[in-house]
Image 1 (spheres, rainbow, N blue to C red):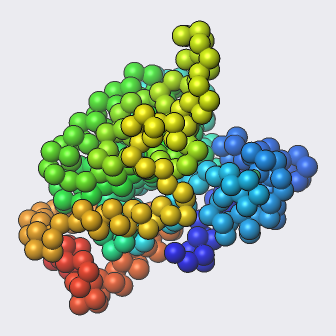
Image 2 (cartoon, helix red, strand yellow):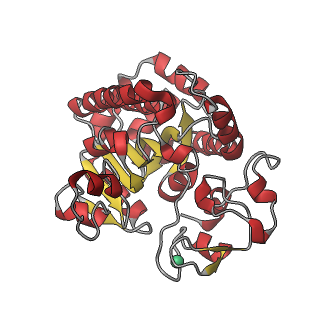
Length: 354
Ligand SMILES: [Zn+2]
């Protein structure tokens, strides 16, 4: 992983600088980054946990981990992908949600979030390589309604599992969500069943799904695709649960144990397979994927079975966003040298050159 790539993704300026008064305000008047705005470009910022002032360069070079207290700053969807994967090609970028219940103010909210984040909704999907293994992946974005799941998120996650099942790819999911999106009511709850069905079909096809639960993973997302993975990793210290601790305490009228709903607590109860530090995440994912990768002969036959129509639609869906475009170029460049690609990626090379 090189830092130049990371710099493109970490702490990006919002695409439309006219939106979001936070960025334009003087240093003293800034809102904390947790209000959902894109992180403005600035020299230093305050750690959400220890309150110390940290140089932005230092924070970025440390993968968003506070060098003073070790607190993990949330990563946006594309920064997370850049941290763990290479040659990312975006899929289903055109999918966007509406306002099915005519919820007051929701259209304006969506428009504002799209403008601030440059994303159409709270998840980014595509294909990439991790440790040389081709994967389908999704990555959720805290800046967009804290990664809540409405129609668009459910649709894209379902689509990425269907895409992976058809092409016999493992799925890696970076999960971050406050749960179902309340403005979409029952429509958002229906996404739990829809995504679960797609995950089940992917699993029935004998394919691997690794979920990386990050802070926070809660509500309808934890009750559906987050906990349906074959391997469940969690970033250290992440809040993971269904209802929030305060709601549970008020309901059962009992004090909850220390560390309740933190990743480490869930691991002791068997809900999480392994707690992973952010810096070791890329290498751990690579090892797990390589361990489960099909033998070369099997991958080749899977590539041969690929329907031609699938490739066309994948090309059409390819990225509107600039990062995706750059990734696609890189990928095209690697496809131009089939001998190099064929050494490590027989299946992938077949797909690209067929
Ligand atoms: Zn700190």
